[in-house]
Length: 611
Image 1 (tube, rainbow, N blue to C red):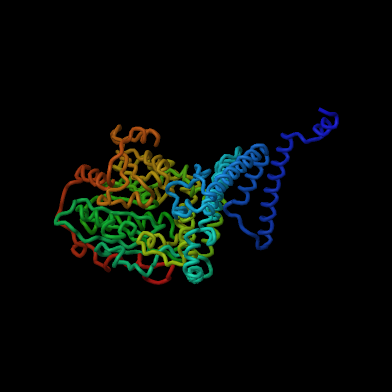
Image 2: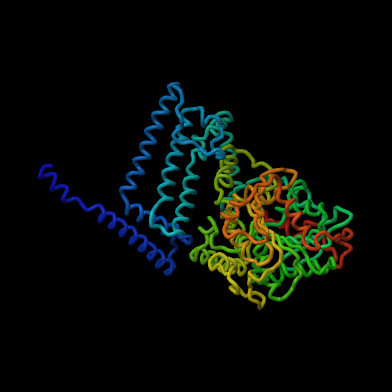
């Protein structure tokens, strides 16, 4: 080595010191930007808010990446090599030579690239693979960055995925073969129609984009959704109570009361006759009741979680017992309704009230230590930001909640409709499930703040005496009511391993069942469909294995719907098979108010009128 070369080498900065300097600079910049924005906000200057901490998370990411420049350079080289291989394969394909294996291929369930031209036309195939290569390397770089704490890593992963999904070539007119063909065929009329659809959705959202997922005019409550015959027999500020008309000459003695979530409307369990769980349960001989929660406005801003307990679930038990003359009921709760149900059981246990004979929990979280991707939206900054908005209005706007859930599955629930409605210029297809999904509900400010802070942030529900409601300490470990938990393997809202941890909290006999599919399809899974299946573990008698992994290792898969398994469990409980003559709503102790589905469920926020 020459003397000159040695001198140059000696003058180069030490790589470790350089990496450390880059990291310190990035971290300092992140801190200064945060302090600057906070100062300007205090001065009343309108600055972009970062309630979710996204900017800070990506500044931290930059610091960690710069701290290891060699790994970053290696990633760039790997991506360049993949692009070189893609160029080579595309040129061979263009010249008609035999196709080599693709450098990057979409997953089998990726609906974005189903059109045959993505595979057969070399140009669209090149754009597809080019995108997938970039997406893979960006994702691998972000998800494997060392040194990020778990919440920051989760935010970076989530919002990077949103960015990657948004830039898919399927989302642009000139790079989507299906849209390109339609544009040529219609002389651009699809784009004009799409622009009209976009403007219509902007008008419906009062200046904000509210993407239509379905033709809402194709559905009418009580006509082709929420059709199971019944009567509203009670109502207060928070809910209407529906009793369904009997379908059998005799019914089980213990009535069934369902507590749905108030984040969504109850008729997810009563979409159509063939997939309606309330219709099926009634046809099996249950005297079925369901709570239809109000869609609140600013008048109910001070309604708290305690109100939902005392004036909601506990009051519903009072009214069902009064209507039927029974001294106990079987209950079921879905998602947040299940969280309220377990809180109700703990409250009643403390009061030595034994009016709940059994409890079933659909995709219910009780231990919130691992909330899944929803945790991205649930830190101190995000909750404080929500509380400021709710303080102004008295409630959380339904569209904000719906937007959060849609982001968890952006390709299916956002971008597919952007392509269909705005690029293809088509009207959305009438679909009852998407009609329900777009029928958003508000959250009272006091209730939602309490729920987010005490369940998600502090995780106090699982702690014995961690919460005090109605003057009593809530202790799930003292609940001895027989419990049945059904969760689903692909659930992105209530991850099944998280729900499993909660299922181990009560001390009574507990059954846990793992269904196929996700948060909705895995629950709304009628036996006639013969889909998905479920897993059960009979190794222990009423006591669950310590971990979800242990449960699954000893589980066996069963064909068909978990509904029949649940029905067998429910009717084999002590006294569960006793029968009485069929109960009609107008023959009970309560006065019929109106026919189901009732007035509360008919109020839609997207039309601001009764449907």
